[in-house]
Structure formats: C-alpha cells, structure tokens
Amino acid sequence: MSSYNENRAKSVMYSYKLSDINTLYKKKYDSTGHANGMTYNSKEDKVLVVRPYAYKKIFLYNANTLEKEKEYSYPQHPIFHAIGYDYNNNLYVGHNKRRLFLTDTVKIEKMYEWGTTWFETSQDLEYYNGYVFFCSTDMRANSRFQNYSFLKRGSNVINVYDVKLDKNNNPTKNFGRLICRLQMTGLGELESISFRKGYVYIGFAIHKNNTPRYLFYKLDYKQLVKEVKKIS
Image 1: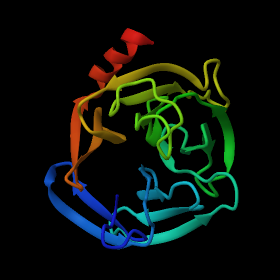
Image 2: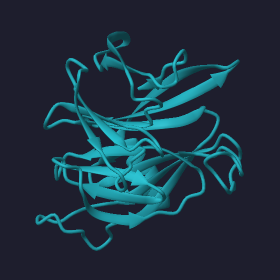
Image 3: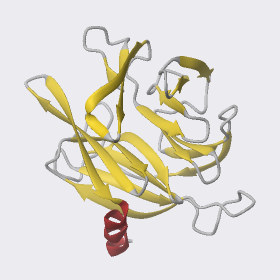
Image 4: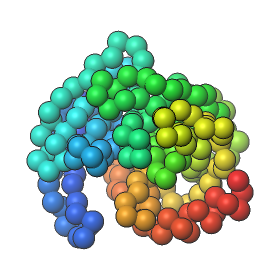
C-alpha cells in the first residue's frame, strides 16, 4: 500500500504472489489517503487497511479482487494507524497513541490493551506465533512524529511483545511484556513486517532525490528467533 503522488488523498494497493514477487499481480487505486498499515486475515481471506492519526476509518478488502467491501468508522478508539492479525485466536492487533490493543474481528471492538514505551516514529506491526512485532524508525528529535531521539538518524527498531492468551482467550502471565528491541541501520526507513509459512518479510522505503523506492527482505523466522533469544 502506498500514497499516490499525483493526489495525496488517493492510495495504491499492489498485490504480488509470493511465488513470483517480481511480477505485479494486481493494482488498485482508492481513496484511503496515506494508508499507514495493513494486514491479512487468512481465515476470511480479507485485507484490512488503516489510515493514520486524524483519519478514523478501517477499510476491508477482498484479497483476491482488491475490491473494497466494508468501512469501519470510529469517532474515538480504536483509531488505528498500525494493524496486525492474530490467526491463533482470530483477533486483530492495533496501535494508537503509545497503546496496543487486541480486538475482535467482527466489529473491531477493544478486548485488551496495554501501554508501550519507545521513542522512535511508529510504523506498522504484525502478529506471529504469540508475539507482536512493532516497527519504528528514528526520524530525529522534534520531527513531526517524534519528540526524543537516542539513536543515530535512520536507525530502525522492531519492538517484540509477548501477547500470548490461554485457551479461554485470557492474557497469560507475561502478556504485554516487551521482550526485546531489534535494531537495524543502513537499510532505509523500516515500514512493515509480515510473516508467511515460516518466513519473515521486512519492507523498507529508500528516499533519494525525492523519489522513493521500496526494498523487501526475506529471512527464515528461526534466524529471527535466535536474535530475539540473544537479547530477551
């Protein structure tokens, strides 16, 4: 999902098959503005897209046709600008104003929430295997979305939270605990993270001469787990 340069109220959704990520599968123009986050509901075969900050809507798309099927509107919470999908419990994970939320998948209403602490600019997030992986980028202090800066400009961090639930969908002992912060530099602006069939896909934006381009990296989830265990 990307903003449309010729009209910032518009956006473009690009779809690729993992078997051939070099070939564009489908493309969809819509009026979601700067769509900040998205996730895939594998049980329903739907894609959800959220708009950041003042835009109080969540959009639901058919994953095959990319046609918009529904809009959720919220005057207050949750006004997500990052979203993920918990396939184990069929719940959504969202972020707003330094808080993370678990919601149902019918009305997207809050079930649980917990506070967070980081100083970088918030990006997108995803759920996988009982953990939330939240992406953030250091844009320097006093930038539009960041008051403090403790890392080198352009540093990226993946904040990993334990969000396991028991068989009755109640939080377990360490629910909401930050277990580690994975730091990366020199790769561009960290935008998103996704998981599929044991692999991790991490997306970066490279800004050069006012022309952004996007790079995606694929790694084995087991390698990511090894890094988490080193510092958790």
